[in-house]
Length: 527
Image 1: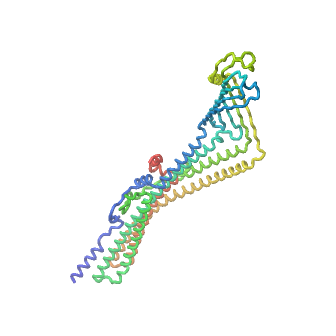
Image 2 (image 1 turned 135 degrees about the horizontal axis):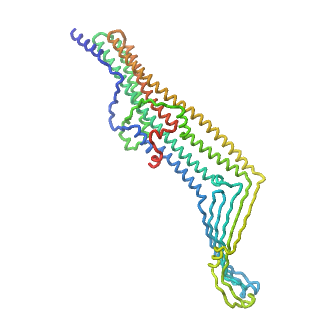
Image 3 (image 1 turned 30 degrees about the vertical axis):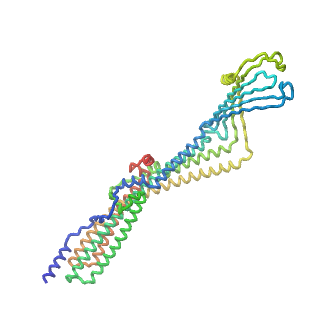
């Protein structure tokens, strides 16, 4: 009997011993290599290593190349030409040549610079020259040199006139570049939110695993006490079934919690884009940060104002609206008649070797020559010795312009559609901001409620265990209160994580998620 009383005393002491509820348990150390990261380190690594983000960096660069290509229309166009020829023709009259054929040697050259002007026209400066040397009888200047310096300007006055019309392709390419850069910013914002969400989900799954292990330990301790009660004869062996069943059930819950941890680890590994060497032997990712419970006061009006200023999707739609407006103006211009102004100014010069004859040049008696060269013709041309100019207007009115009018109607419809889409998008943003602010406020209140529920569940379990110790309760109620405590802990943890995610979601909705984390796009591109 003394042994039985000793066992009973031990049981009473165990039941009366203090229960520490809510204490955090650390998972058993993983065998192998672990990777410990703070949230900031995780985000920095993803922004540097993530494959999809690296691919997105190329889009602005491609758009920039397209803009440069469109701007090449303003590069000057240079052209050069030189021709040297000889012709020999039969002489049909003694006036042509003293011999039986006429030989003419000629050389032509030309050079020009053509430049597009911003309002749709083009300007050209050209220099043309030639040299002619002939055996024909009666030549007074032979060889003869000619040079002409010309200035030409062509400007459309109706169709094709205007800075925005002439630079339509450049302006559209610039808008496309703005869209590409803004889209990249949006991609970075979404990636930061995705990484943050994946990080906190991993934290939640690890903490949930801790809670499940604590719950399992509670059920095992309770089973051990019941087994001790059976040994001393104060409890029937049949009463062990509920405790044993509860242990098995909580072991199954741990398996599900471990699977959730592994799934969230794999998701974060994919975002981190670990190398083969880094992933080799890696058994676990250990988040170093814990979700904080710091109340954020969200002002709806201020959040809406920030969203209208900083939302990247709104900026993309606004830029698209500008492109549609450019397209509408361009198609309107294409329906106008074609009226163009052409102005030209030229200065010719002539030089060569002057031949002096005795009397009529046809008699062929040459007294002497006065030498002259190509420089003389050049000097006359650049000195504007002989001034020539002309101005011409050319009007073309198409009797039918079906295609241009159809394009104009389509451009107007596209413009109206873009306006409606932007208006609808702004309304969606307002709704999203309201939901985000409401979610932030609600989740904070939920955390407080779940915290109170968890504290009450701890007290209820303690009270029920005390009642069981003095014989006023049963195993069923104790096990039920243990399950209630586990659920309360899980709900409180989920609410805290949801509150942290709600803060990040509001930052993303208002477009300030990068500013809050001091992330600069230039640093991402340079890396």
